[in-house]
Length: 194
Length: 212
Length: 229
Image (cartoon, rainbow over all chains, first blue to last red; front, side, top):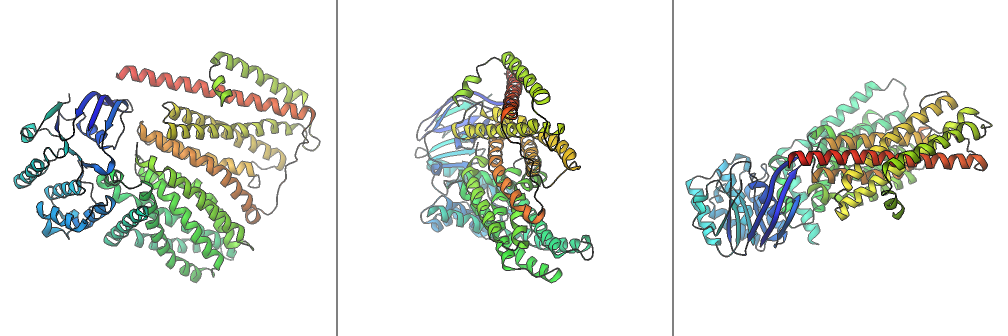
């Protein structure tokens, strides 16, 4: 699914990533670890297609419509409600049976009751759960998750555990975390950035 | 057809955001009326009607700039633009939808501003209205495009007028010509030409503004 | 294009010597050989430089846009820097157009600035536009985004040139009804030769400066690369 050879990324003179080799097979669950500033986010942005490498080769065998990317920011409009945000993304991703799919996700991530509230009134954990709904909305083949456990409380984290376990083996997952133990059971491979 | 469905969904979102926050349109309205009052005092007594016609275009341009500076603010916060860029729609749809939304705001502001101008200064002919419509299209197409670039820079709001005004000079020429010339036909044609040329250029290159 | 690619292999010192020689010949022709203008006398000689500098500036802007297109379309790795350097040379020559045009206006009409002179107004618009280009470029961090922004804006420039030209022409009927017609020189004999040599000298000078700046900038980039490697 992902094949990286000596991938590097520079921003001007600053080199944030160099010489990364990575092979992620279809259905694999790859975990990227490393300290702050080691380039985890940059690597994930490259794999999601938001940036192009400055050097090396990177092939991602999934069209844009089949990638789900969870960023540091939730990538939702704060002045819109959860429902309106997901409806917009559902239309752009041409999700079949959009309303049912959105309703199902909101229920699962315990946001159904606040679906008509603007995102600005959400707590950080709720916003993160909404971001997860956005990522899963179009049932992507490749999930690129940047620190998905950030801001989630115990219940939220368990929901995400269950969701990831359900997708395990069926979808390809690339996840960055500073707490690899959390996903140790699911991980099929690990990449440590220095 | 899916292209226009995407544009529709995105433009609908922008109108919804404005309806929710209600900050751009009232600001534009207040600004344009305040500008007219300033113009009244900056025009010496007995200055010609032509001078007022010229100032109408200055007012329109600066009111538009006010709205255009706000256009990509919702996307800048929380980097939502990344989310839109990742979606499988054509990237130019993002520009087109935003242009349509800003055009709607500018048009709404002018629905009030033009009658107020007529009340304060002098009547407005059909050629001027046609000129305003054609100029609005060019202003919103180019301005939205440059707005998307400006929000991604360090200088942000400072940069948009600098980028935009040199490109807006032909619009002012066409607009003022349509308002004051005896035969406005060729000025309207010039505005239409501007819209087509720069519209196509924006449409073809917007992808590079939002991707690497 | 083949001529340009062949030109790019000529070593820099040879270019510098060639443009120095050609420039000397051009100056000699302009000041000693070309005949005095019947109407405006000696001062009309600035025309040879004014017009050829303007053409050179257009050529630089066009080259900048061409390199910008190469960057966007072919992802040519060096094209961004080349586009920037070409635009930079264009702005230098554009400033010279404003300067020589202003001198000419003072001598011919007694004013340092003349809104009735199309080319002067056009270059003022272009000067403002390309100054904004630099503002844009220097308020984005170096990288692919900056390259894209610069390239797209440089492309807007070449569309703006004819559109502005047209706008300034049609604006005359209501901004400045009186039309100044330049005392057009009757091209022929030494006038034509002098103009062609001056034009060639300036184009070569612009190309030499372009190569000098490009070499310096590339060296800078290489040094920084080695330092941060």
